[in-house]
Amino acid sequence: MFDPNCVCFFDTTLRDGEQAAGVNLNAAEKLQIARQLEKMRVDVIEAGFPAASPGDFSCVQTIARELRKTTVCGLARTREGDIRAAAQALVQAENPRLHVFIATSPIHMEYKLRLTQEEVLAEIRSGVSLARSLVSEVEFSGEDASRSDLQFLIKAFKVAVDSGATILNIPDTVGYATPEEFYQFCRAVIQGVAPPAGVIFSVHAHNDLGLAAANSLAAVRAGVRQVEGTINGMGERGGNSAIEEVAMALKTRADLFGVSLNLDTRRLFPVSRLVARLSGVAVPPNKAVVGSNAFAHEAGIHQHGVMAKRETYEIMRAEDVGCVPAVMVLGKHSGSHAFRARLEVLGYHLDDQQIAKAFEIFKKLCDEKKEASDGDIEAIIADEIFSVTPERHYELKDYTVHVGSGLATAAVVLIRDNQELKDAATGNGPVDAAYRAIRRVINLEPRLESFKVSSTSERSDALGEAQVVISYQGLRAQGRGASTDVIKASVRAYVNAVNRLYSLAAVREIRLNGQPLASGSSKEPPKAS
Ligand code: KIV
Ligand code: ZN
Image (tube, helix red, strand yellow):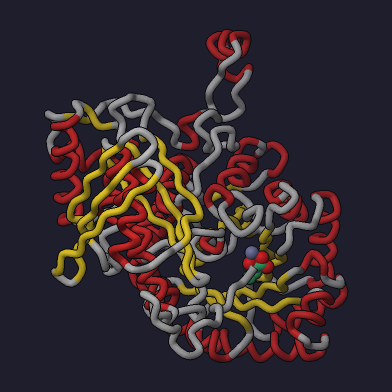
């Protein structure tokens, strides 16, 4: 039953968030994130855009099958094909929702859709009615709502309600709104539509001007009861509204907002870490709520104040967002029970086989270094469990590097289809040489878009974690690798990215290795904003 005082959270990390440049999560990673989101008691998870690609379809399908509590949502344009694909992907969901959208702003209708207002209303009528005939809960979004004509948007929402939508979403698609103006706009929309009981309004803010969280909060003040956003604010351009920011603002300033949340905010920190690690999009240290410095006090005067009374400089408690240091450090003598328990605290949901494999690698790591930090454990899982997916076209068997003065040489051995493939190359450093050697083996020249190495803790025996993004013929793939040896981590990351590139190419029916693109495959799959 709808509680008018409760603000629901709709997480679109796996749909809008994944549209961030260079991010592509595989099915295992998406499922892991979805499971953590469910554990955090997010109300709705938008798992993908099923019509966009077979990969998106099957991810939505898997998440819909696996999650039993959280509502699982699939996105669709008003087109029949999109709606049927989304409904089909959601068939096994316990709580399905179909999210239908079409642009309602003059600029989008004229230049992108080339449709008149009447035609857009007709699209809404047919799309939402069809969606409602297939799925029990339908959300409708007027894309670019904040730049839409108020009266037209009200009309569009009324048509959506008449056609069966019960959630009406007001997106600030291009992050153009400002809080006071958006508050007035949302109020006017809510008053103008005046829907029957059981219909709620939603907000979906983008962060182009850094105002997404503020606009979402303004919308809540105006009466909106669903907030859409992503973990860490991940998303295209400036990103989306960060769920952790809006949730903690509503909770910390309950005196002002007077609303309740279903969200378990103590899961925010682990979920944020997971999303950062799997997406390769790092959280800046000063990021509100989940940054590594969010609860760190450097200035002596602040430290003194916090010691005397915490509330002098802390408005939230670190434990309320799940930012708690490990009480027990795992190491050489830790058994599988302690390891399993730590995985549980970190929020991982792995099957017995995966746990056994992770434990074996953890034990090997503890032979190299006495203790393993949470970061080490998370890196092992990200590298050894989630990267082992069907897209493992190439496996790294061996590599050697030699570094001279100003020149490095590398030889690599990869395995493909049980066949050993080797080559060697020179470069200006060991990583450069190894990457050149890999490119010779795979006979492909992807462009290296980004390459980062970080450590899993501040200790010198920490694991090095490498993240790379490569691109080839319009495809972008990320890869990661972890090892106590940063060269090895970098090589593993590159091979992982190559494997993901192959998977993306397969989904989009693009042939690699110099062969021509399959006909019709160069068209980009549809993307929502
Ligand atoms: O930003 C946007 O308008 C969207 C819609 C699909 C809701 O992502
Ligand atoms: Zn969006």
